[in-house]
Image (cartoon, rainbow, N blue to C red; front, top):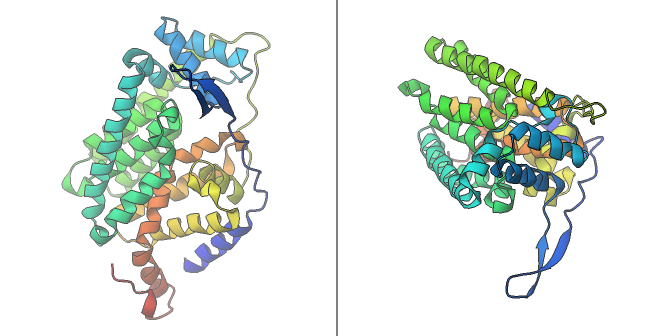
Length: 356
């Protein structure tokens, strides 16, 4: 396995076909209430679109009419229905208001950090690595700390995925709150579905049949809700509406790196450095032989494969879904490296045997 990771790190450093970074969001000069000139970062097109949809829903307009109309007028595709976001965030934001959504986001972040702190601390070898692990999760979610991005669905979904992972305690018979957090994430963004499928598969593999049944029920309920969503979105389509290009692009390793790098502070680094860092984070999860280590690796690797297969360059923000979990894996390298070194038959790891 160590040789495989070294090969992947070398490939990530080269990153064949790696696309240029997305253009920076322009800055604009405005005057504040006191008449002072202020230079501020403008919202990008997606953020402006989401805010306009929320404003129209808040004014009483039907979500699907507002969303499809805004996407059409701003030359966003509306076909297929997957191009239209699930209504959860827009309806919630329109109902609660901007300040309440900021508060809700902060509460969710605090709950995520507390639960994550407790979960890592409860795993073998996790106590010493816990501060670094939680810090790296925050690094992976750095854009979520800026209220400008509070309308971005992937940030909310990422928090809910991490919260669900942190609340999952099957050995203690506690997985209900984890299920609810995952259900909330799925209601925000359909791209949480791979995580739900992974959790159900693990439960089935471990013969936790009640839990496996609950995850299956969630998939069935979501399938029904998604069918309704696609029906309502399709009802708003008009002849000549823009059609989305395919999401199946087969970008390989560069597609994975592009999404994670441009969703995190790693965009500041050259890809020959950021690529091996992400592979090292995967390695950290892979060698930490605990239930959380296994889940962290399967989750991070699963989304990595998905991003290698699907997602155009302008879908880079998908990387936010998994970046907190992925980067957190780097905290466990001091535990993983000696373990993988021994598994490779290379003898006593010597200086690599950092106390865990």
